[in-house]
Image (cartoon, rainbow, N blue to C red):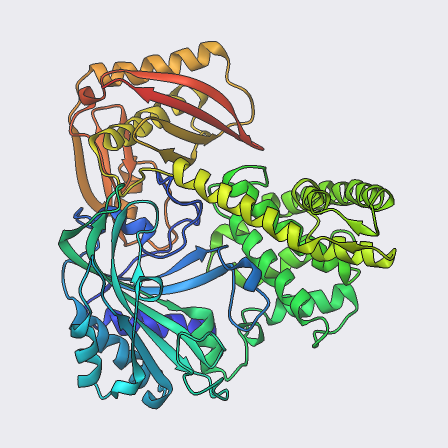
Length: 589
């Protein structure tokens, strides 16, 4: 079975059960500061999970591009990936647990023909915030699953969300496939992590909203959000021992073999897998229409880390200069038909990879000099933890590389001390992220709705002042301010900034009513609306019209009248990345 056959099989199955297909959203979340990347199919649907009506209806299905780096150190095993494709189906206040579980069971055992005796499931065990999910367990039992293959776990395992600090969430039931590997012991089950049981599907029952204080309140609209990992199921359907053995990775692995002159075998397996995974992720980030480039902050920092990790592993296999761009060409060719944005942004992808390879090559040279300097002055034949961590933090040296360099010269490294410093660094980063990424689409407050409205007026004003070549490249909204990225290749003049600000305030002063109309993408395009036009016409979208000032495809939330914004002030205009500028602004309404 190919990836396309699996994708079509899933989409068609749920279409037959009344679901409407929607297209994959960007990897960069729109107007949502709670996460850096789209980590699940539910991110673009948050407004609809909270009650907004979706133009495609209450039953939806898609294949969503996703990226997660929480398990980045696990990449290289049989199943973990950073970029992956999530097949998902949703009920927005329509069906709930029984229908969801029954359809999942039918798809796996009937449509795909997976033996039922290879499937185990888990359900929420209950705690002080939500009861034990006996309802889901009883549904599984009614479908013929014995009690010994139904497991109860707590929030760490069987609770999903919210995606950020706040938002919709709830208990889930997870579906595991038995790979046939020997049991690791008497109590081998889906929680042990030995590799015998692989999670393939997660059905989330969004019943609650978690607020900033950590309280859970029932949602007015109960939703179902499911996610089936395309790569993992493809692996099962083709009898492969790992996701890297599927046709999703075969051309990438072959390209690395050709460029390095090495073989994909036991001793090179991890290096191959990390390089293949990280470059695939990097190409999808760079190839996104939001035009993220490597940097030291936010998405750009994650992208830089992925590229540099890939570079290190390729270097260990003696890949020639320019190898990353050559592998990227293979990735674009393989995925371009399903994801046309990769082909559209090919030149940007290749240029950024070449530039980052050159920059990191210089950083590695500097790092090697510093590493040798530190080792030269090491006391008692041991490199201090602080210096090992500085090599990691400043020059991108992983601990294993520092240990290798030190060992070559007869020195050891304080690895235990390094791990403590690294753990403290991670905790500080998590705390900073928790403070930074407040609000988001799940906030749905009046403040965020007004600022969201202001981005439309700002976008229209920028296009009027700077020309129609200006396009939105991303936005980030908290209750206090908006951040808007747009395509433009130079710094704006003070006069241009003042004129953009004036035009937005003229739009606000006009007290224009804000109207929402549902139409097809083709109709929206013909009406003069701006937005990211998908490659699959026919999908219905919402178009927000603000007087004669703005007409744009969007999902919400918005104010009812431009006058609600009060006044608009640009605080800063700066570079975001190559060819992309950033405006930070506030409103006083």
